[in-house]
Every structure is written in structure tokens, then in C-alpha cells.
Image (cartoon, rainbow, N blue to C red; front, side):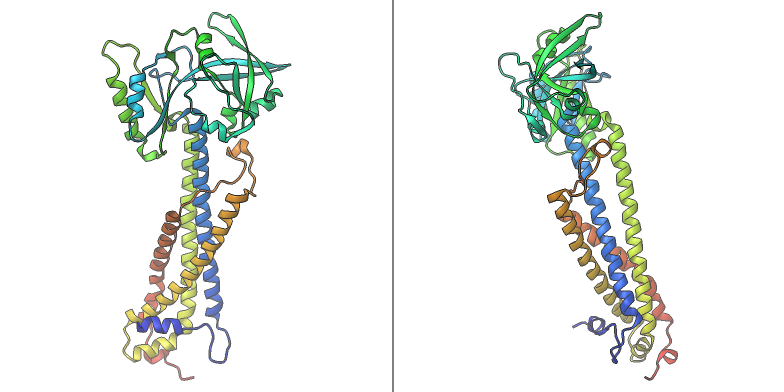
Length: 419
């Protein structure tokens, strides 16, 4: 066995009379500090990742990761339709990072219930539309089915249903105002109500049959607002590269004399306010990681210094026996490593229990109006936990090198005391 490791293991917290020394208490405080720090770090990253996953998943469910429409035009603007291009859509769908591409049509309107009026945006979809997102968040009724004949079924949000006092199965009267001032009236049936907790989108978005939207907009056959592209996996760092590949296909599918050009807009560009908020959250997490590592490190420094002061005579004896400063420092670094590892183990157990309970039972409630979710979301992987532990251990042990320089200043002649 390594001599340094052997001595470090024999280095207890009490003397031979059984009286505890100050270093024993300081070591416990250091262990608790490391445990609390790693607990806070793991929870910070788990909650931050949870918010990011939930928000991106919801926005993607509403509008896809990329939106293709007329250049410089918001896809929800019904005044600038584009011609559908099935071949182009199939080519984009063949890209390895693309999960789905779907045509959509939009039209703004007004829903009235009694004296309550709410402006809404109707999103027209066809029979091939993937309703998985809305199925996961369905709270009442059923998902509408758009087959061969035009359907009057619509899907509205719980927020909108509460504002207008509607329920699944109710009939809705909607009003659409044309550019010439003519008002069109349509009656729809509420097939289902979804609850995604995205306040600004929930209260205005209504899903309907795309053929209704095309007729209301007076579009020609095959005209749509654009396409929504859903990725296999959202990775913010890869968006620009993916966007370039999509735009290459858009450029190749457009003839030189074709005025019906298309442009791709990423989810990040369209909802930049939400992503700025997420980036701010990431910055807060980074600050927490730095502070918690510093707190744990400097508590460990104080604990190690107390241990060094109590072991000055032993250090003198070891030096007199010919042990080098480097080897003596190794003894105390081993001792510090034991303390750090105990703290890391305790912190990981506490973090694991908390994350599991919150993930399973969602006992911490949030206001969805402000946080977009009803509970604190948790999302963390084993590799992330290992990375946090490894980085924290390395940084703290590097900080431990500072008090070890004190060993080189201890003189054997002055420090050796006969007890």
C-alpha cells in the first residue's frame, strides 16, 4: 500500500484519550459544505435543462423547429400564400435530421361568446398532420379527424375555453373580416380542448381543417401559408448548419424566373424572447456553479488548514525521518480527497432523491402564466451528473494545493514536541 495513503487513512479526528479535536468538527463542516454545493449544482442544471426541454418541446409542438414561408413574411400572415411543393417537401423530409414536414395554413379571426370577444388565429392542418403534441396535452374531448370531406371540428386551448366559457362538444361562432371589410361567419364544433400552458400561444391558437382556411382566404388550389419542419432532436448549436441545408434545397427548387421564393426561419429566431430568457437562466446556473464550487473549495481549505495546524508536530517528525514536503502534502491531499468524496456521495444521494420525487410526484407547483409549466421540471442525464462530480472534484482538489504550501515552511526542530 502507498505509505501516504496508509498514513492518511490512519489520520483520525480524535486523540488517544478519546477527545475530539477541532479538525474533526471542521471536517464534518467541510463534508456538509461539499454535499450542499453538489446538491445545489445538480439541481440547478436539472431544473434549467427541464425548463429548456419543456419550453422547446411546447413551441416545437405548436410551430415546428423551422418554418418555411414567403421571404420576410410571418407564416401566420394569410395575405402572402405560397404554392405547395410536394417534391421539395419530400427532399427536405429525406434529410437525416428532419423528423417531419407538414403544410399549414393560417387565418386570423374573432370568436364571440355572449359579450366576450377574443381574437384568435386559426391554424389549418390536413389529414396527414401529426397530432402527437396535442394528444399529450389533451384535457377534454378528442383529437379532430380531417378526412375526405371538410370537417367543422376544431381544437382549442383550455385557456381560451375558460375565457369564453366553452367546453368540448360546444358550437362556436367565428367571424372573419376580409380586406375589403366584408365579414364572414362560420360555425365550428369544439372536438377537444388542449392544455399546454403556453399563455401567449394558448389563448389565440385554434386548430382547424386547412380546407376551411383556404376557402376563407380565397386561395387557389395548392396554396398554403408555408411548411413546418420538425427535427429528430433539437440542438441549438446545429441550427445554423441545418438551416443552410434546408435553404439549399429551397434555392434549388425555385426557378430563376419564379417569383414564388421561399425562406426558412428557425424556432430560435421566431421566439427569440423565450430563448433570451433561457440563456439568462443558463448564465444564472453558471454563476451558481462557480459560487458553489468556490464555497465548497474554501470551506475545504479552512478544514485542511485546521488539520495541518493540529498535526504540526507529526509533520515535523515525518520531515525529521526524511519524508519530502511533496510526500507529506500528498498525505493531506489524500485526507482532503476522502472528505470531498464523502461530501459528493451525500450530495448526490440527496439530489437523486429530490429529482426522483419531483419527477414522479411534481410536488413543487409553479404558476404557468409566468413559468410556462405547472411544476418544477427535471431533466438530467447520468453523464451530466458524472461531469458535474468530476469537475467539482478536480477544481476543489486544485484549490487544496494552496494550503499544502504551508508544509514547506514547517521546521522539524521547532515543531517536534514530546507529549
